[in-house]
Length: 415
View 1: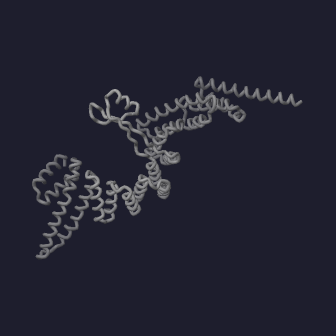
View 2 (view 1 turned 30 degrees about the vertical axis):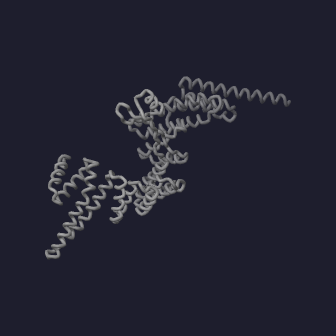
View 3 (view 1 turned 30 degrees about the horizontal axis):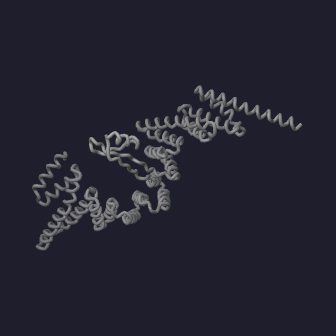
């Protein structure tokens, strides 16, 4: 009796397994014939048998389901997501077929993504590049590009998810760039890859090969997460995201600067100034940091500190035009109070003497601003604001020759 039961069960299992194989062969035939709707129907009928399938049949099922859902690139977003999920379950005998399908999907997503990007359809491009990452998760740059494009179309909730994923996987984004000097032009050129650059050097068209690393993007990612929260009106979440990032990376200067910029966005000037001062201690030769401290000091009415910071920025970078312009503007801002006092004087001898003193002070004030404005114009010959201000100063101090020359320059700019 026991033998009969065992034989009966074995026959039932064999029959069941045969039925699974038969249904999967039908689905495979439908996929091969591009009859994807039929294949999906057949596979759904088989799905209830999954728990009892052996590993090879399960692999075949998941591969066929992925191929049917993807439908050779015609699938909608939902089916593509399901197709990728099925592919992740493929193991064993169908790994080769799975890799081939992944390769086809990747090329399709990248081609469509690039086309959408070139056509400025950034929302579509973002989804294609995300799908490319889902197919090839080692290519994290696709996920990063997807996040950037989601922000571009103000799809903030999706962008937050993408940036959050980048943060969680520890995306840094440092890339190598390959350069060599063109022998004919003498100019340095960047190449698409190391191999292309090396071939150019070997053939003799280029010399002096070099490599450079791009800046890491981890600080930028956290900053963008915070800025998205600001756009959504969630300021506390923005500050919390930045605080958490800095707590994990207390020595990262870029994150410190990102937090400072966040406080500036939120008009928290005291916090912004404190963080900038901390940054200048860590990086005392950073001209931009000194300039930003000057801006804050100027806005706070601390003129002497602002002058000190602007002057330091100029010493560190003599061609820093914004620092030169702000220094000139800061010096010239004193003119208003001088004129106000001059206009309030009477006609007594003492008042006339004070008037002459103020007039001389005004002239010296103009002269002190001239070097900064001249530097701006030397660095940026088309700066109409600097040219007009210099023209007015030369007129006020009685330098007729320079006034006429600057007047001609202003007129040549179309003003």
